[in-house]
Image 1: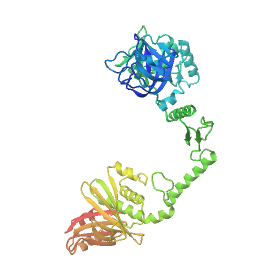
Image 2 (image 1 turned 180 degrees about the horizontal axis):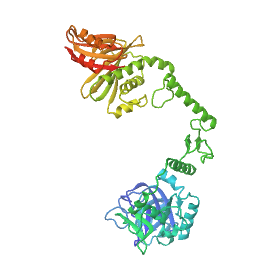
Image 3 (image 1 turned 60 degrees about the horizontal axis):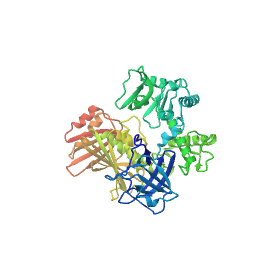
Image 4 (image 1 turned 180 degrees about the vertical axis):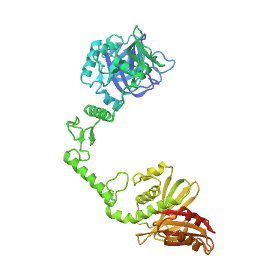
Length: 550
């Protein structure tokens, strides 16, 4: 932009680094009633004369004080323009070769000329909001300000704020407006309207009252509360003082934000600022009296096919059926945060999910200390590529004894909320079984490991605990003993259980080596009380006794 201002009153100082070396820049030349738009001018040269062509200028602006950005070169007072482009900057004499009988010479009478950029942009939501707010840009008098706000208030529900503005007091002689200008036409609406530069607002008495701004209110640093002769707020707030009122304006609701976006989109489509758009979500459904209808540059489609009463009924029935499928058969369809599994896949995964849940629950009840991580390792051929449902089943099993409710959707987030990390790894190498699932839990006291597999793809088994091989049924009450591999230890264990009048359902043994560390897993028909467990812990060669229930 090139702004021409009298030297005694420079009204614009936004500038670029230099005019002579600037290339491919957009300019707007403004001189009183004369306005010239020029785009893409390439201005070059080492001296104060810059000539891009020997063609004659259409216009020659002279007798100007031109700021060029070049230190030490003060003699630029003339600008030559042809076809809307700047073709020369220098002195009247240096640009003489660009002038001819048809050149329109315009005397700027010493006006100050400053080059600069114009940044045209819009804040889309704010722009949309402004389309439905009061506009005072064209108001030329006190009466026009009052009439405009009165008309807007007539169509605004009582109590709602009237916002907008863009008034300019220079348009009616320079006198700042006061609250008395608008109080009579807006008794039921708080009003706050901005000056066009955003540095002042005009507020009515009701808005000042709501904001608690009175004669005793002190203006914040960098702000001004304009006052009348009695010291009362006159209605205009400047700069940082505006914040005293803005905080009392209600934030836009979700519905209002939707409307702002709709207004802005509609305006941009009508003006061609947006070449075209497609919409399938609307501020109101069913789709009735929509302002986008009839525009040539928009495609509208129903949202979720739910734009009719019949379609909405179908959607409701489908959702209800999906809930029934999940509750009756565990089938999940069309979920956005868990995999959708058909009945066949669900039946195939059923035994795996059951085994995974048991392994997770076992670890939850078996470990000591505060858990920090869970690692789930799949080795061998598990028969599926996506193990998300199985991993989630381990986490659900782990959390169930600790939380009131958990499911496939909430399990990962609930685990993370407790500060427990989870990881999953795949090991393609051979195992002693067709496949196995290993769950390792680390706490602040120990690291515990359990692995399981399926016999005939249906029968769950614990195949190792802490690395010790075994073949145990993961079901019911279980006592796990870690003891030295010595004679009589097993007999003493079972004797204590028998004396507690608890029946043994199954018993599995494992050891790392002869005479080393042995592991005994005993399935019980009912749990042992704490006295019986302490008796077991007190037996010779017994190192650890823990009881879990699956």
